[in-house]
Amino acid sequence: MNTQEVANKLVNFCKTGNFQEAQETLYAANAVSVEPEGSPNPVTEGMEAIAAKGQQWSNMIEEVHSMEISEPIVAGNHFSLTMKNDVTFKERGRQKMEEVCVYEVKDGKIVREQFFYPLPPQG
Image (cartoon, rainbow, N blue to C red; front, top):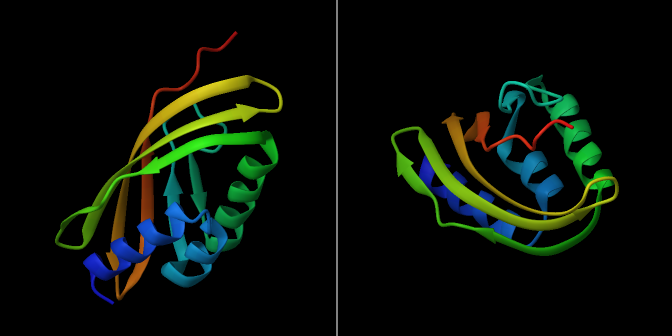
């Protein structure tokens, strides 16, 4: 798959909430996930650890009120998209979140993802 095809498939998986299937299908075994500095898991390496991080995120959520995924913008072997979420966390209540997501593709698989979003205030 080329970068555009990977990007389109990821958007389709995300729009239907199939994040685990997206990871199993589209990610390289040695993929790296990068969150903003100061987040609980700033760098996660390998699909097993990335899947565990995704499960941890799911376990923190009580209810998803809405989720919007933009169409991807592709340049060479990178693509980006935006995600907007309105979720209720079990511990922190309801929050609206927006992030820019950037992905790198090599040999038809996502090898790196990086998320840009403001961290919630530390209290």
